[in-house]
Image (cartoon, rainbow, N blue to C red):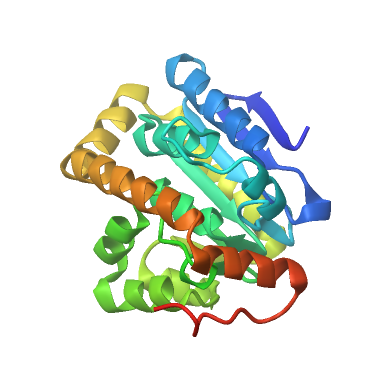
Length: 254
């Protein structure tokens, strides 16, 4: 299975398990994740959710070959189902991030409650470099969390940045060694699972209450733009250049 799903002591653990592709996510994997989160929402035995990857890759983001074969051109696409579920989850979500966290590998963290990163973590949101726009309501949430200028630098330039910078930006709680990361994240998830479920659920709901509608509206706007831009000349040039292993030339586009 490319998504390892386990339940233990009230914790649902969702682990990316596609090491040969740096845990790049396919449509089928998004569907698995969406369904697992949907099931967790109604399962009283699940009291916390943990996302993890490998020591070298949380996830490299979308599998581009699969992405182009199965483009997310409607709100019912598996990737958008996943984003809806993670953004509306009432139960606490913990993420343990080591290695690369590209695109949605970074933006999904904005919907998590506790994010722990290994010192080798490398984040990036290269949407502009692919001729696309942000997703997961990151164009709303990242400026809210990190401030406009810091968010603009990451979303406009799309360049990679370190765990230390992610911590300074406010969406990573703590940096640990690769060896310490997963045990610590599991311990934190276990603390959440041991607390009164209603208290945790209501506290999360109250903290996120004022952003729920705005997040939905922003995500819908991003989906509309994303779908249109996916078939535009700039994106075609970006993807062609990627597969041809060359630098894209956007100078021909206005």
